[in-house]
Image 1 (cartoon, rainbow over the protein chains, first blue to last red):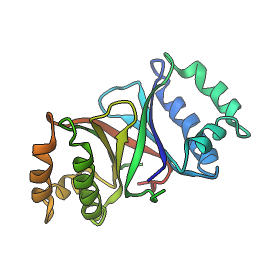
Image 2: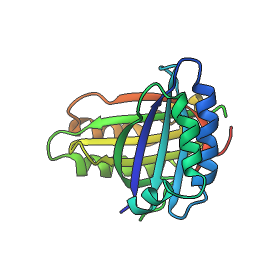
Image 3: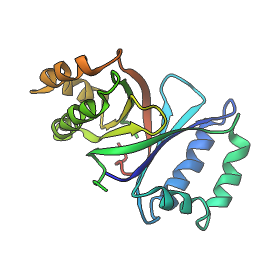
Length: 104
Length: 104
């Protein structure tokens, strides 16, 4: 499979996780409509009260990168930034297959 | 959304990642057929050559836990254990929604 995957860890400022989840769910709605996006799942951490993890799987990295400049993306990034305690961390992945993704 | 999510990090013994990916893809095929399994995606880490990450999303933790004793699960665990450099690590998640999962 030749796809591109990410786990992105966002740390919200204290008390701002719910607002951050809302912004990221809006992003999921927009990004999910972009060609090549297979997964964009927003998750709260069960053990870290300020942490949100986003799971992404794309047909290619190019399509992921293009989504960051798609219409509406910049506005969402501006909404999210004040809610963050620091820059997001990324785990870069090469999906090999499984339930819920299509082989590349 | 009331689902249950996991990122599971497996560290393979040197040179055993490909064999581990194969075992986990077999597990994805079996587990993906179990009621309540929305996602079971096997990923290679891009930056850590011995690491495999599995992304799971379930309708409930109970259904996830039941899958560990489903037919064939014990055999797959026995196949995977000798390939591992240590015990898997888990990030427990509460999916909030997005592209690729259904709201609980």
